[in-house]
Length: 99
Length: 407
Image (cartoon, rainbow over all chains, first blue to last red; front, side, top):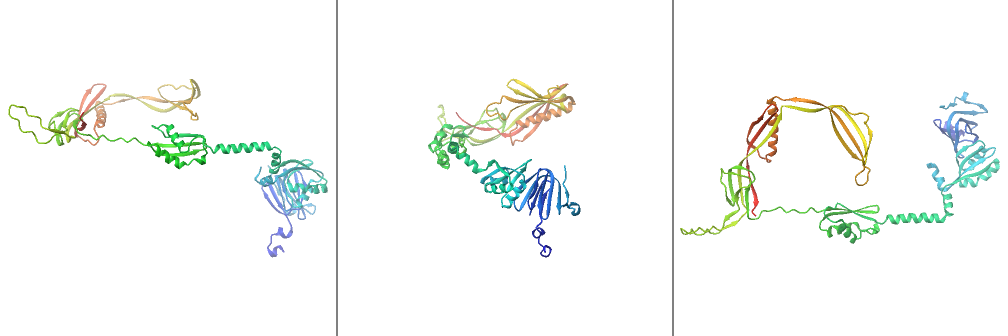
């Protein structure tokens, strides 16, 4: 459907849209809530799975029903879908540039 | 405070600490209610965050459902500042009084300064300005500046320009005084023409008055050349023989005429055959010291003393930020430029040329402007092993007449 009308997929499929600034900041639109929040790990519900951010001094900058922003020093961003780690198959796991 | 916090600051917000088993769910619930939570920070068993006032009032439901406890850490923003101030009316009153006093005092002219006065009395200018409404203690808005400027120029005849500038609580009156008018001295009869220089008269043309000298005469500076007298009326009849001829009636005039004369100038200069000059080698040593009163504190370059021939230059700079009077603190900078002695020898012929040039230079300085010498003469008057001296003479033709008021 999205392809038929050339609509952005995130509108139709209800999947997250993420904007990442280096390894310092990340804004997730269309999220499904915080699942886990600690200075080393933040887990955010998105679509059918989760976005997991690992790093140091992580903090949620703001929470709103539509969007959520995460700040800190990211080391790893992974997607977990269907209860298993999906970063190998999907190839979307991003190794954050560690210092 | 970040820019993003500005609006929350105006409307007021609180920093809260949330403790409980599921602060994540708590955040989700608040967000799902259309509220915003920002600047969160996760502690070991708690969470700190900012929420605005309407959000804070709606937190109780979320807290109950997630079994968390919410505590206010800090109240921030204007509403809380206003609330605190309301409890201290006297402080508000004091601040308001202070600000209004500052405002009122800054609207008053406290000092009237005068700048640009040379001969006039500044007190007079202040007095006139005061009569036009510009005096210490008046409100700035009540002073009609163009009126004061006009009034100053009209009232004080010695002023050609006046301007009033307001700098804070100071009114600066800048004036320019009129230049005193110098009337040129017009000679009035009787006036004579006298010689300005020594010379031999070659040409004499009398336009008014009577010549006292004739062409070919040698005159000295100050001699009378043309006297300011002319015959007047009818000359008396010739006297009978034996009786004295009565003096012809005359009247005083301003003498007028051209008196051309040959004038001689001379100049002497000498040149040494052997001279010793000091040429810099390019090596420079600098010493800097701070001078406070009579105390000298070496700052730089004092561990080394220059050896050999040096030229010494001392520059003393007072510290510039001293406000008034002579600064007691000075920076003394001494520069030693190393030099070597160079001996220069001239042959007698070369020395004569040098002396001639120098003498000509000295002579041309004596010549009046626009006068070209008719002839030159050179003569070596001193010649020995040490020095050659040359005398230059020049002859010119020029008008030597000078009008002089007869006393």
